[in-house]
Image 1 (spheres, rainbow over the protein chains, first blue to last red):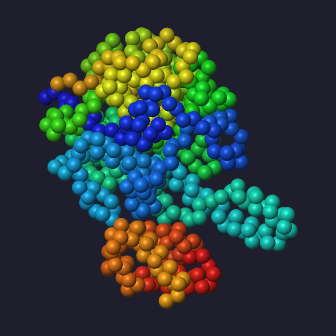
Image 2 (cartoon, helix red, strand yellow):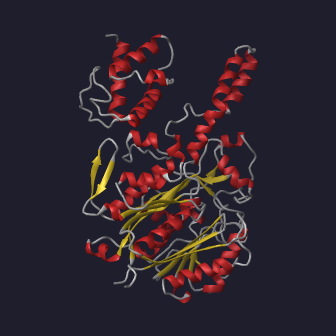
Image 3 (cartoon, rainbow over the protein chains, first blue to last red):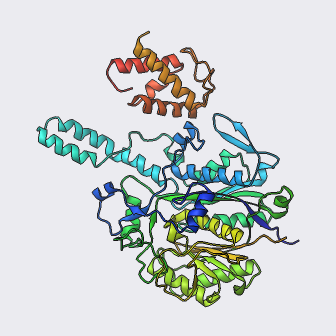
Length: 455
Length: 88
């Protein structure tokens, strides 16, 4: 029996480039990138080599339809996944009905919800909540003691102490929902609860390839008949009040170091690149379903997923293995999985972080296997690095590039480090087969192969 | 009823309606019970107490929280705390 075909019928995004797919895609094609200085108060706590990031737009979850209860009980990483899922369900034109008004949950109409799953990726899950609660745990009583002691001091001393205390704010409460808000699997669980989906519900935590893996596993689960519909993708929220998550990447020397000009600092694949641009995060969700079922219900079909591959470097927790053998093996495996050859590939949405090592090795591998034929870009040149959400945000761009037969430029690329077919202008192109790939701390290499819809 | 008590009552009812996703026109009284009349479960009540803390400031201690059975209990509690010049 031939393998079942898997199509993408719905998309949703929460990103620095927009809170819906239309705005996201328009901003990508316009080459926009909203880079800003890191929050001023982060400088109270440390010296940094990198001083830029890409913040998310302010999200008014109440205005987006979330109940007060949902907002109180979820970390932003889960709320963003839920909102991106809502968009994916709506754009896939699946009918839903309200199941429980108080819980603000829904159920799908005309679909067996035991055949519907949720596969989500996240690198750090609800770390934000963990750190908030920890600020309460560590600081609150000590700060209150200082406040009492201050009463015994002179006015000048009190004022000085007050200034110090203002620099160590803490969450007013240790949130009673802290455990479920922090746990990584809340990301997929929250989406499964929101839409009453009883099929397999999985969260993948594999650093920057987390959501690529989630999509790949979802593709396989539909292809092999385990499930019929899957909301898949990922979410990441990397903000904390003190900037400690940012500092972890900064001190590891992974972030953009030349920060004089915020508009040109982020320049993957350029000779003058200096690291990756930290993003506050985001989320992207794809609805995958079996091709014939999608066709029968008249679903909008954006692209087909035809291949998935993963390899592991077994080399180092932070660096790519220098000989590239596992990246090449991954790419050969994904071509084999889709029964295509290297010359069939029209476009590669690269991992393209902007670090010295990644971009050099990735471009070497592409040149070796594909030559200069496929179009090459990196969505991180616009979005910065959204860590565990990046693979899903890039898969959305890859799918839209196939559907729209155009793609965005490789932003800020002036002196390319390799003779590849980097996208320099937005124009109509032929993209039938495309690869989106992600590499992760740990040594994980993941690739997806997407195709245009063919009968 | 004092103006202050009336204001506390209105704010409590507003928080209860929002947290428990009640219709705006739903009639609440001081005798309305959280468990029986409003069908709140333990998770709902924890959320409600968090939002009341946010609305009125301060912290509702566990020993006090278990005594809050009706909306009137909540209003009394907050009014008492206000009279003793504590937050909440």
